[in-house]
Length: 104
Figure 1 (cartoon, rainbow, N blue to C red):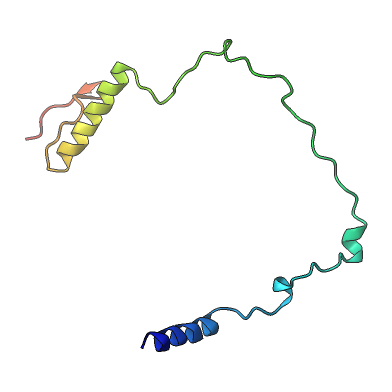
Figure 2: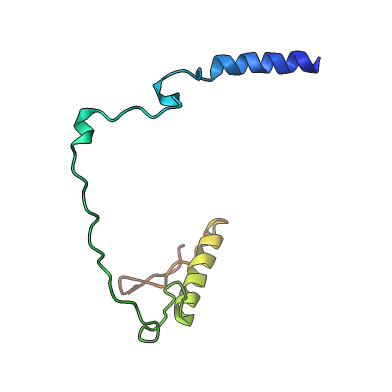
């Protein structure tokens, strides 16, 4: 039974997969045609950075770190979004400088 399954699978794969014939599967490299043989070689671009960077002169800054104030505001926003999913509004107290009262 296993042999029959293997043979059936091999037959299905030969139907699905392309045949190993054709120019793109050739073992030898085709000769260059006359157009590409006369193209001049292009020199690589010059190196833009020639001096080495000194790690002592630059201060290492991790931009993804938040200050305590930014962390507090982010926590408040996340809490407001979480409470909004269950229907509790904890929106801002002032919008455009005008105090917002509670909804009636």
